[in-house]
Image (cartoon, rainbow, N blue to C red):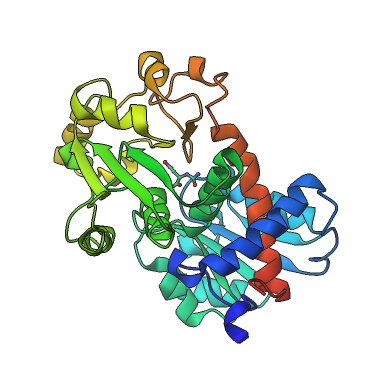
Length: 333
Ligand code: NCD
């Protein structure tokens, strides 16, 4: 079925992939993780353009590593677009069409919401969204779900608590959209008011619709707090199977007034060893990284801290995705 094939498809939103396709991708990623030469050579002769208008460590390098893992090559525009023709005033559209003359797919990170869709509208090759401002980050959601599955053994029947910057955190948005397709996932949201998901945002609307359908009303419950060791937040964290911690997205606070707000809330929802001590032994802590001060390094050696394993998983999940998009290997069948 054509629907089962990701060949040549853009991947600008997590809504572009079905749970069945994800299942197949995860099997392929498992296979690669266990035996990194398993798919060796399947992208030989193929190239990927990495166009990053915002800083990146993990996303850009894991796409590069994934391409190399499968024998492909990379056209990297990741050292700052100041060295590209963007600094001469070239439009995003022209840059994309140009890269599409050399590459078999383009990975794009850009500060504007909707930029990946703009790129997809003109691109002769598939566009993969690696973050469009505070919008979406769909490949991160895939590796987050893959990590949840490999850490707790399932993608349904669990309780996830998102903590921190839920308003501007694009990884939060994509992962929430994705989790709404999986049964019995309870979503708790813990943040100060000014970092909460806006009700009229796309994610807010989707959560509202899901909450209305959910008889037990346990999807998207919001707990407003600045501290994780106080009030209801304590009880939520003690019950959660997955704690998804995020950094306050400083780069989204651009005006002098907004920067004042940032300074007031930047130290909200910090994880402490005392809070971690209350968590279930089987729980796991995820973070898309980079962290600033929201998780102290002393927690890194706790077996529940899964964020560096999450980083490694990203390479295998992205390799599986690139293979499916560029080579058209059927998934979901
Ligand atoms: C995230 C991003 O860029 O949205 N990082 C990442 O891709 N792993 C999260 C962040 O920057 O806070």
